[in-house]
Image 1 (cartoon, helix red, strand yellow):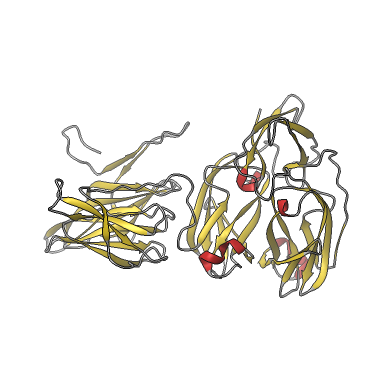
Image 2 (tube, helix red, strand yellow; image 1 turned 30 degrees about the vertical axis):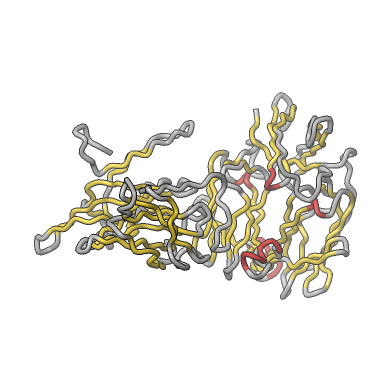
Length: 499
């Protein structure tokens, strides 16, 4: 911020334009190593928001007085957690070194690039760092004071400024390619844009799978979640995946399920993770999940939860509704409330599903429930007390290895321990409409079975480009109505509001 006289102050004002949100004013300080704030910050300059809007990274000019009374002024880098209003030091004030112009990478909030200028030589070096580990590498030497670096939209390179006397501005932008780790320079820099300075590169759309080998697919940032849904995605390299929700609770996800689409990025296919979660446990409004690979945050998403306002698990509701002109003009889709999902599912025209199931002692196949409807993406899940490996057979035609060993505290009494959960994310569009069955195999032996009905839109394995919002009258109670909306990522409908 600037004072009335135009001089900078040690303040940052964050203006929140979202409805119902308030602006925040931060007085800048430099957290000392022992946790005590030091009043060394004079003003801030370059800033960048994280993709999930949780963090603000910025550089600040510091005036530091040493024990002997001498003083020095340098730039250093900090972050503000906008949820907790706390400040962290990324790089502390260092005599003779200006560390400035920080920018998050475009596909992950776990990486940043910045300038490191030697005050004696007035020469800068562009660095890139992995924030969770502190691993940093020099990317490029700048022919001039500051490179003002920025990652490209896919994080495959860093763009920075060089002095260029052949141009009117005296500068040009250069591109330095990076390895898949987002840190290591590969090859030599090349001219990217002549006669230009101070690059600012932005990315439109969702945060995409980065070169580091991770993608959080559900819940997508900006999406609406309702009922019992999936937190899912893939990670190339990890021993364990945990999911943090709002910083209040952590759950171990099932990890290691087959994802053939990750073969190119990861070099293998057993990289999927998933966690079944009841969104009714959260209050309606904005929430955040963080994906932790071996306790290190690698991805996050901010989204909205909508509920019926009737508690954590609503019982006794029923209702079937026709949705006109969906998925195409002149066609009608039928949805039906399914208590096990705490949501609506697509059904066949008759709305009837038959089926049965069985479970061996010390096991429980929970989803899909016998006689249920399944549509879009769903989780095949349950628990087994004792096994080395869990496989899931679908219709006797294909077998998939499930992730096994996730924490299930509710199995303590039955099993004597808790690491008994299994799960497999599956797209029911792949098997088509009609009656199907799954068999659960523990070390090759059947321990559970369920027969159910799959209903699809009849538009292939993954229909794209559909949209639709519908009002369901008289639900969940007479005189009220519920709004549902098609969500492509889940290939199903979600509740977005109740009136």
